[in-house]
Length: 230
Ligand code: C5P
Image (cartoon, rainbow, N blue to C red; front, side):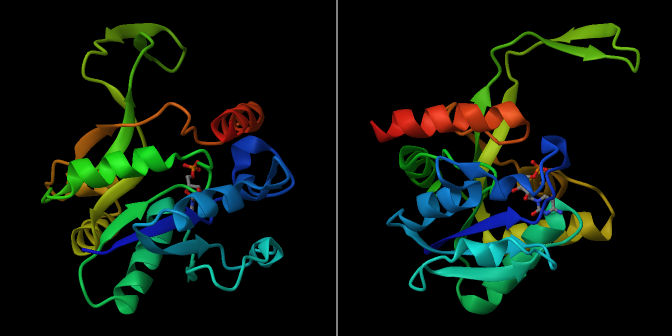
């Protein structure tokens, strides 16, 4: 079964308060998304990457990716799930089989090949697929609108969801179509699969794989990348 990657990169990253979407901010001399794409393209099992880019995105062409990179462009949508759906739709026209798809945030440039390998190994025969995640280490509280603590949530079985999220192309397309039809907003692919009645598997990932959201995340990502290069 072939393996493809889909990278939603059509967000505007408003929480970063920068002059451009966070995936285009410089990180150790190159844009965040370039690190992300390199990590995926250089993995021997990944055949190619479909990137969902916003329609009026002036930054993408500045990346000047090498011509021989198997990178294909799809149009981003207003929600992350629309961007992923468009990319999956594009991929379906590109392949006639039902490949594995690894959906990975453009804003996660520190993904390790060992994490991809662990996923591919653990899920190889899985009928559903799964996602990378990290067990919760902090004590977790639910609060009300005034920030008063309502309860302490038992963290024993709580994980933080990361990406890649790995599913069979056909299942994921159907699941996303269902959530889009029902106008049910999902923030990751696993949620769409759960909505469609599947039970994705959680695969433990490395804590390096942070999602760049706030300015300080860039500093941390730079540290992680430098350390990984040692
Ligand atoms: O905003 P958030 O950090 O959750 O975005 C996660 C990923 O989804 C980012 O790589 C972002 O570019 C992408 N995204 C997208 N289309 C949107 C919103 C977010 O491709 N409409």
